[in-house]
Image (cartoon, rainbow, N blue to C red):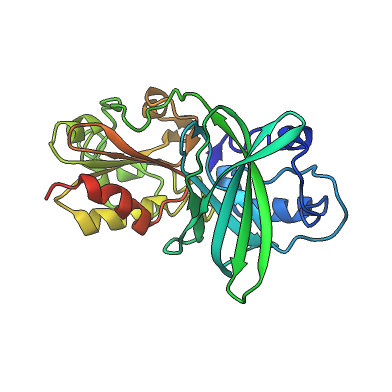
Amino acid sequence: MRGALGRAQTDPREKSGMRVKRRVLAANVLIVLTAASLLSGCSVGAPAATIPGTAETPPIVLVVASDLFLVGSPRVPFVLFDGNKPFAGAESIEVTAYELNGATSTPGWSGEATPYTDYELPYWVVYPQLPHAGYWGLGATIHLSDGGVTTGEFVIEAVDRSDSPGIGDRPPASHNRTLSTEPDIRKLSSDAEPDLELYQLTVADALNSELPAVVTFATPGYCTSQLCAPVVNTVKAAAEKFGGKANFIHVEVYKTFDPLVYADEMREWRLTSEPWTFVIDKQGVITGRLGGPVSLSELTQALTPVLVP
């Protein structure tokens, strides 16, 4: 995910005294960097690169796939890697949140992660309960398809507030460019195969339509990693599946491509990273905010409750 992601994932873990298992070690640096290179178009956060330990190589690395985690029960997507390859051999994953408070780490919420395999890069999502701001360790017990068990962890920061619109907010009624105001689709989208239906409405139009809407901020031509580039494809598929029941809009992150200049809507929505996908009900209230990867099945789960019969 492009932007300032995975902030400060080294110092909090070191200061907390959180027990890091021997397999997540200094040699993990090369593996994490190799895995992150697959995601480099989006600057996805990765496990800390200075974790002390021996040179033993961990079989599985967890990479967080979004940012901006609000206090409460934020959506936290993550990806498993085996070396530099996505790992698809997990049967189930149990996650425990650890409060990193000074010299100790206190276990808190535990729950199951949900897999989404209908995406170019399979990912998992968990909604941990984080009652207050600060750094939290997420420890994962990974049950493998072959019957084995392994572990992994990463660190995220929970914040009290966000400048960008969230669940329960009314989004800006943006007057984004459409094919009516800019007939050249190559100036509206970096998508190699754009769906013209995603460039028919402004956000203001959608909010006045009495239909729910999906608005995605993404740049498939410039965020080319396996995590963020397919997001627009997901929205295309949802538009085909739910056409007539909701409006679908792609807002390109850049208003010019040479040089790259952020779209006015990125500033209007106060977005500092991408991709972000918002689900808005027919009353104009945000009911879903999905950062990073979004598969068709996950978007369907978020959209179905607000669809007009």
